[in-house]
Image (cartoon, rainbow over all chains, first blue to last red):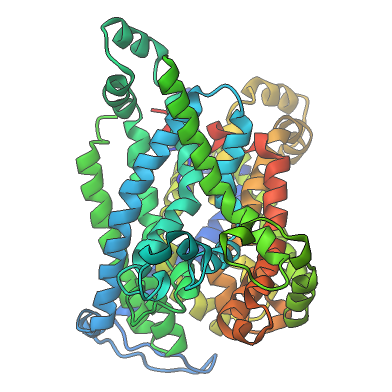
Length: 317
Length: 277
């Protein structure tokens, strides 16, 4: 799921171009055509599992598509933007997009702040380093389905959280309260994914020069000041990546509303677009509508990613 | 660094560890309770309230062993595909000159940002309907068969092997497959373990896709059968939370144990190599 290494390969591509210059008269398929053979299975896989379905999804969203018996020849009429019209006039779908907006507003800032703070603290610690690293990463390696069970137990009406809160507990309780269901899901996902982002920030912190901190402290800057003036700008490329990944993961939300709130309840207050894609597309048999939701969702994510990139200023890095 | 700041840092880190670990502790305790005890005292194991019945209970509703085997086949298939084909393409990308190399590498990066939600419906139509691979291990494995992150990791490791080593062997007349098998592979053995671990977690925890393509309970990975239990039949069990938590422990244990055992192989530099600016 992660976009690993977009930076490192620059060394490799430099090597590549040098090699290309050396072998000026290279044959049609390159000097080692067997490389193509080695890569053929992967290329076929990408074609079959990514490229073709991607085109298919766009095609489907502009046609009247429905499930039919395998092999049956059916004329799928081109319907232009009808599927999209259906999507944007459906209040339940609009609501699910709004829900994801709420989710991202809570989840993304919380993820960035908490993972950076914890990574910075973890980076300087001497004792228990391994233990802490493992502790933070464990939720990330555990299946959502498994930890959802515990959260249900913790947040149900008579659960531990309400026992501790006593009269402060909201009524109706968290997951069946339309105001709290989405924030709880956002907290859950933040908690579960945080370890991965802490790890990303830890790696990024290794590249922030120690001398900068020493210079700042000589100039009389305190810890807080050097955190904001050195650490935060120093890990900016990581922040851009964290923003992007958290947004993509968040818009993929499915398992949590499906299980934590029993399919997007109460009354659609925690439904997500992907959940509706499943309900409309597969349960109710209109894959064309589902494909249109998917296309709109991806366009939304792309716009968000672009805006974040502009705001976080990742271009110059 | 002064004392207050040091204590503050320690406190923040400890609080973080508590928040991350407590639900897991609570999962184990909850799975052993005869009757669910959601009070604060219930967070501490009470010998009078401990039982293994919940495990027997969940096992009678969903076949835990079968679920574990299915999850294992799913994860194993993905690992096998990733290691075999990922090594080939990673080696080709790092050490061989061929037309289309740049495009292939760009694809491997691009594929990782293609959102699954857009592919979900067409993949379902293709795999479950057109190819008839619903309720089939192959259909489960296919969309994850080669992990692109692993391809990048392999390429990264193969880049570190000096080219001269291969050139020398080529002069001695070794074929490319032999080079890969007897020179490249032994040198990147640490990468192999990292890739296997990274790849394992994905399919083991994956819910959405196997949930879509498996309706036959005998073929469902444990995550899917546990989720179905959670959303359908939990209300009919004597101690639904106990049973759910018992199932959750069984599902979580392999991934958590493997992670703890091999935690030093989840190196931040592998996962975070993308952010070195």
